[in-house]
Length: 239
Image 1 (cartoon, rainbow, N blue to C red):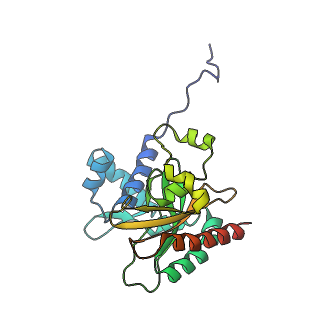
Image 2: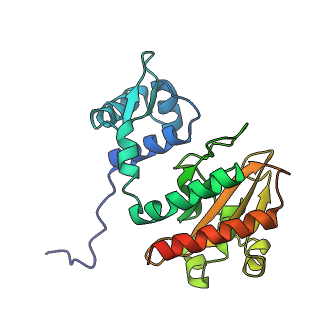
């Protein structure tokens, strides 16, 4: 007797592929290259399994090893990343460059990825005594940070339901519509502040335009006004 298609179980996920993607996430989150043993520990597998996964990723150029054998993301990852929301990146880059150089702060666009906020593209100012790096691919929970609050203000009840029980709406999100911007301090990185404005572009996930800086440097309202102009220009550039 044949099993009906409706009753058939869903095809299993590829454990090897899942582990390979997780290795890339681990390396992206690391502040420095990792040894194979460190990757294996973070992945929760035997060293030999981690080694085989890394060798495959290395063959494709998405990871590289230094002279000591430590592993980091390779240049091929940058080429792949450029293809993510390509039009949004292209529209955002000149605006972020203007904001970064005008304010002397790192400017970036962050987008919603499930229940996290991920930096899509960032620009550091050309001339500044001290800047904060905000690398593309950096992620943190939607529930913290100015970009997360700004993105929350864009979400419909249906979108909130899709995020699951772990997502809790910040009370500050309701005020973004009136203020035009969101702020945070000591939430993602101790000692740093951020200001963000919502960015809604058809065909793209909910996003935010933001700056990150040492607390106390500028008035948040002034930063929010400048970011609002940048967000409007990015949206216009996507039409």
